[in-house]
Image 1 (spheres, rainbow, N blue to C red):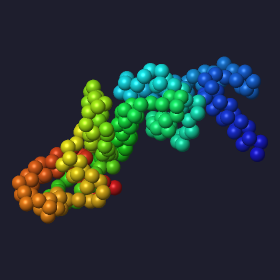
Image 2 (image 1 turned 180 degrees about the vertical axis):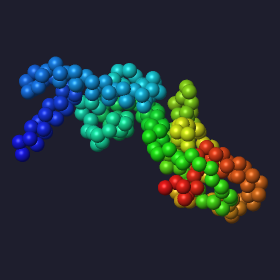
Image 3 (image 1 turned 90 degrees about the vertical axis):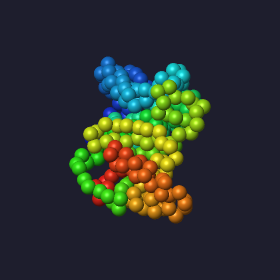
Image 4 (image 1 turned 90 degrees about the horizontal axis):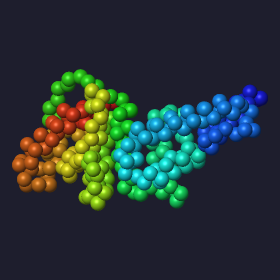
Length: 242
């Protein structure tokens, strides 16, 4: 039991140094080395946060942003041992809304959007191989794609926080690149339907015919949009998405 206790005490000493940002002179470790370790870990944490949230950092109040990062390091509870999960942990921590560093809702929404790009980037890349399909082929939303609603257009280079709510798709294509695009109501319905269960182009057109007398006029547009999302790897054949 002694080695386990010693190991736990050692880890606790390291964690305390990181959270405090300095070495405890009373710690049973070399204070200078401990301080270097604390700075290294803090720099890594801050680096991952800044790389994931450049837009949020740009528009947030600098003091609030710094306070949020400091509070996260000092008080946050890690649920994953992987550095790539730090941005998600930071977002969850910030959404708790503690008064000391409460970030405005529009900043949290920017963070949510930027984190969705990281999720797409770290997902398994869709298969890069040609396939044949027709109107009866069932498709699903790619595991490397996501759809979300936001209270404003988070995709804009200069976001207007008072703009109309916008649905956004974020995805990784078969080449490993990550993209995002605002969705109109038609694309939103198409992609959300495919996200819920396998769906073919023919099924979409059949459903439309059941609720609209103008379905025949809409069919070419539905086909065009369906083809677009297949070509961009947002929709994958159900048998290839596993």
